[in-house]
Length: 325
Image (tube, rainbow, N blue to C red; front, top):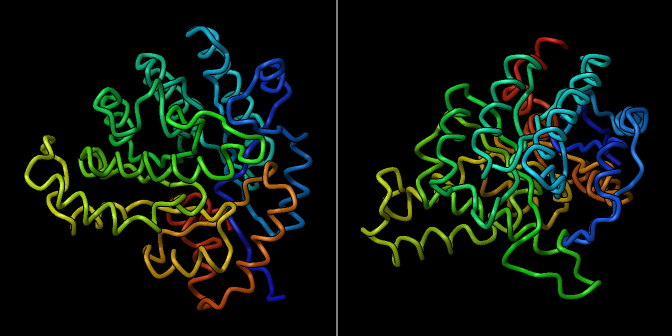
């Protein structure tokens, strides 16, 4: 096997006990199994996989499972303070994407953005692919994007339960198929709504190699130019297929569960090479993390580009990580 390059993991989840307690007794629509997790487990995984730094994040279904608006805000604040404590104890090993209340709670989301960036020095925020039946390009969420754009925030987009695809069979839990589709849906919504072009200072990372987006990008760009020609009603909406494709390629793409040769053949020939980032999906990936990491390490890619994908591109997004080398 090829020598493993040093890595920065931008897709690394933590599951505190207090979050698992909230999950207990809930019939999760996505049928997610929550593994055991401790900070020591993260550090051990990182040491075993040559990961210098991991950016910690909350995974699906997010904090909205807490129920009432006040309970959700309380859970979000507790999670962010906990993540900050871990990062403070291991400043060179961890950073974190802050959690937010559901974006349909605009006041709560905006307040938490102010808190996590000014008081906790968060590295960015996690947004889920939809809230209350609205994808991220919805005009309802414009004030949140404006606040994030103002501070040039890094936004990690993680898929969540699809409101458009109810659970059908135990052999097809949503993370298998629906999560990649949800990522493509919300990314396309951000582009076609004009929100991606309206707020260009937000650096948006899509999970899991962009889901199905790279595969359907030509379909989205060509069909949107044909069907919506001249009728996209937002002043920021892309005009024509070339602008649609330009905006689709402006996302960043983490390789969590997406480092196979099949995916890489498509992604590295489509996405800008400086927009590909390493991600492990620890601890949810389990043994699959080994498979995808080995596939990435053996993939025939220019050594310089591979180092950029594993570490350098993340250092460009998070300059403090370069300074601490």
